[in-house]
Amino acid sequence: MIGGVDIAFTGRVLDGDMDVMLRIARAAWPYAFVETGDGSFAVVVGETFRMEWPTPSEAFIYESHAAYESWTASGLTHANADKMLAVTLEHDCISFVVNDRLGTTAAIVGDMMDSVRENRWLALALALPRAA
Amino acid sequence: MDERRLREVFEQCDVGWVFDEYASERAHQILREMHDVDLAFCEKIGRPLDPPLSQAIPADLPRLKPLVQTFASPMTAPIRAMVYCILDGAQVKAIRFDYRFKARAHLEVDVGYDSGESATFSSDDVYDSEALRHFGLMKMGKAPIIDGYYAFRKGD
Image: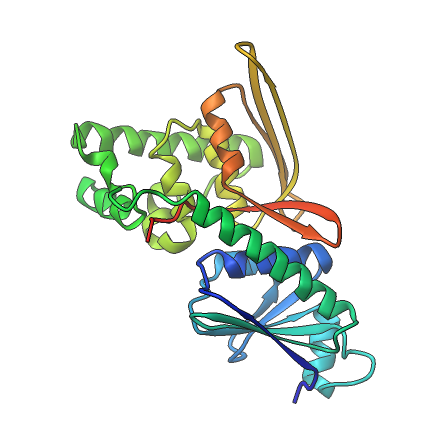
């Protein structure tokens, strides 16, 4: 049980969206630790750029390895509540779970959504012609 | 990678038109250019690219699609090596671009891995400035972040 607040970011999900969000996460939390939704992988954020993130997929992004260990051992606590955010990629929506709407995780998600929006625009604006 | 597989790879990356003319010559040229990227990576990062690019690309095509697209344009080996580093998880640390009409187009990109490895890749070829169109533009609060390197999409 992670609790928190759900934030939905609708729109067709593009290949680069997860990469953009992970790079924002690393900028915010240089020692971020990322766990896949099924728990099969848990790696430092730098390793995640070598992974595929198909739709649908899910990830938990922790502030650090210590935060990951805290969540794994104790679940949600007052101390670790704002040190993890959840991201779910669907075909037409990215969903987030953050601690609350005013905390660190909400601010990071805000930056993620703004940056994804900008890079989707760039991707569409610079698309190759259909005939190519 | 043989010529047939190379063509498949480029088609899957939306740049199959590269082989519309002189296909065999283009294939050999591209394989040479991939080797040049191996050398540029080793020179700058200080370790060999393992596996070499011609093996890494077909094994991990979705991730390396933006790099494959660089072989459809006249990009130089150091800038392609920079692209590889970013797709491999390196962070863009700094970009310097200096342009003077008919005189100069200089691009320098500093990248760094979480491991501490870092390198500066540079070029004076204006066509390498294409890289500027592929970087991800992001913000953290009001602070600018340029990171990531993204493929051209195929039009819908």
